[in-house]
Amino acid sequence: FELYILWVWMAFLSLNGIMGGGMLMIKPDGSLLGMQANWLDQTSFPDFFVPGFLLLLFNGIFPLIALWGLIWKKEVKAFSALNPLQDKHWSWTFTAWSGIITIWWIIIQQLITSFFILQPIIAAIGLMNLMLVLMPRIQMSYTLNK
Image (cartoon, rainbow, N blue to C red; front, side, top):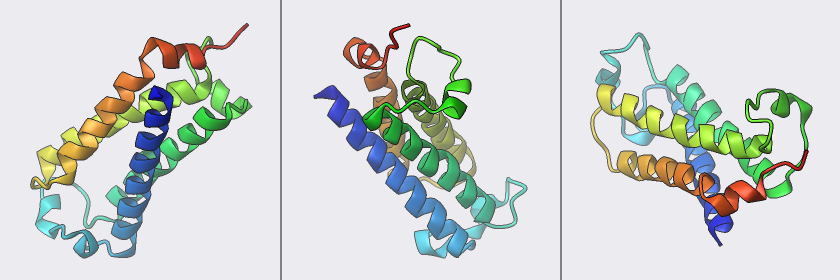
């Protein structure tokens, strides 16, 4: 049951990152998401294109890859090479990283932008992903037999 919840959270996180990042890249002024250009005054970004690309990559595509791995448990040498925990499937590690990346993304976003309702929701999903992936039953599901 916990595993299915993790898959749903990862799918939601990925969809949110792909949609949000894509919308920021399509309209870098942030208008599609109701963002204001002055939110970037404390950054070196002239518009939301680069943050949108990073959002798409780290909170969209990366969790989608992790979700694919969680579901199918395929061995991908390139991904396994990036996994410092050799007793766990790479998708387990990528999912943990995804939770950490999401939490840090929201912390940084809160420091440089105005509050909006999705921020605590996405932070909670990142925290939930991290908590779920650390559950013993889920860890056992992704422990490699070597």
